[in-house]
Image (cartoon, rainbow, N blue to C red; front, side):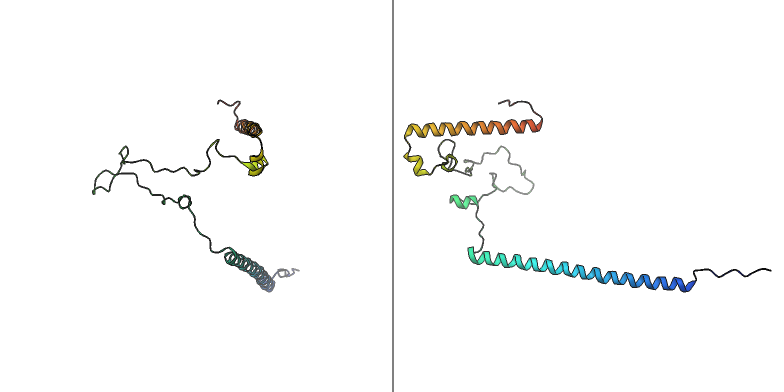
Length: 173
């Protein structure tokens, strides 16, 4: 006699239960993840508030920051981008290469107070200005000569090291 086959082990009820459990777990994870992002946002806001408080305290202590250009420090005028010549008419060539602007270049060196050989770096010598001035002229010259020789050796060592790292073999100058 023939027997009837057992119904499938997983029927529609099981699929429905699986779907409900999946949706519940997904929503629980979403709620937990949202809580972490809220904490991260709160931490970021606290950090920004702290930075704003530090800037406010700094401005209160030192005053508002001021933009200082090198021209303003020298007492000169602000930089301009005038290449000489005058405004031409519509359609006229705009390139003024080689045109005589009628004056000097107007270039001022950035650091006009220190030139090679004129200034003495007392801190590098390990002395104050007063101590250096108390030395005899011959001692000053000997100290400066020794210092220049040391700086020259240091510069050469740095150049040789740079050349070695770059794949070169010797200094050409």
